[in-house]
Length: 73
Image (cartoon, rainbow, N blue to C red; front, side, top):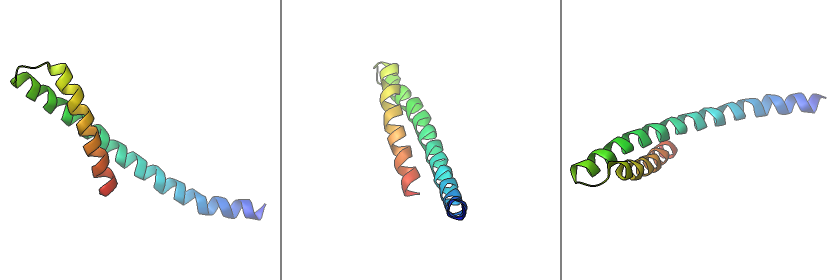
């Protein structure tokens, strides 16, 4: 019984820090994909291409950039 309580005391804060890190990384991915989608649609529309396709490409690139930013930072 004592080992179980000790394990919970140790693993609780570790799990909390991991959860906060996941949330912060998720926020940067979400922001990066939103900004990337807007920029991709604008560039595609400005160059005469399909804005929907530009938004998809921009969202993917922005999400990847946001994930890298979240991991590095």
